[in-house]
Length: 66
Image (cartoon, rainbow, N blue to C red; front, side, top):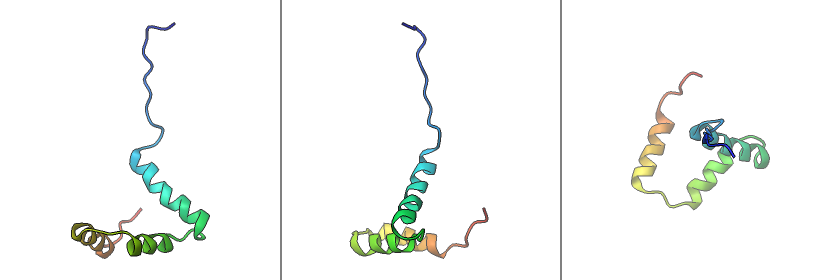
């Protein structure tokens, strides 16, 4: 038995994982388009005024270059 503790770290960041999940689902269910997933969530989920405001802000801002 080893007395040295094992240290593990994630292979990808939490944001990287979370960001990839909607894209993977869109690829499986919607031909790669995120629009049907997002519109479904917006129609069926109850969003607070703060959440709606944040979504509007994100949609209205200029797109960042990759």
